[in-house]
Length: 401
Image (cartoon, rainbow, N blue to C red; front, side, top):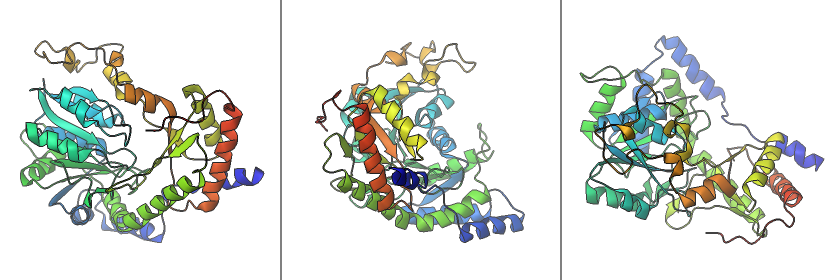
């Protein structure tokens, strides 16, 4: 076990930069132009070409991108926006930035994406946008979500922050909606420290996004520009993306094979016509919540980059403030009479989110450099800890979905 501890303590870290990235940063410094110039324009063009879309707009981060997407679509006071209840806070806090009302949607247990049937139940005349989220690089149900959006003539935003390079039926995620947003934050597959990219095929939206990004509109606009440093690093990351995604895919498949004989754990793989990129591997472990937390602490202490899946957003303090914020609470506005009027978000019922987000799902990061030695050491350690915590406290034959 001492050998395994040594191997885990040397788990590959991310991001991993080399001479090309160093030279790119030097190039920007020597140019004496540090924001929103030639590097950004080149990166935007490269990104559009990679996705196969007409326009891309670089921003400071994906949260800004999501906010601009809603602003460009004219979402505002009294409007409802349907969004997955399982995501990072930015997927929903951007709705509050436009003083609109989030309507949370429970997830599909097969891919942690928005459940199209639950979405259909939540559509109302007030629904002015849908934000579909691609979790951990596992393609969502965006095809079905797009059909619903088109049926009701509601704009669709894809939060594809985790999924550059993933696809469904050979069509890249981030090309299904009216607008898509990608994250370039330090942990992401294209790592620029911080940054984001918005993509669209609609020229009207591309023009408005560009104006809103940099004080360029008569209406309220913002300082959401991308830096030249981010763009220079992003151009290199984009070139490496498919190869590095293939390494993550190989690691996911290898770990699944290593743990295949264990009936208390499951490595989630993408099936059918979808291709996942495994920004993180979704790992299900059949333990109660408290024991999952104990196991996670042990793994983190040994150097393994693991996290629990996101907590359900309806429980977040942004939607359950202890005191009324200065901007107010849009669902309590006297002119709003929709389904979220005066609700207590924390009391809403999302059974699938509760089961998976609060329970047994972990994120395991297998960035490039992770190899069979790391994965086998991880599997042995995971087995040791599992039986330490729960030799007979839970059934080891869960009803996997």
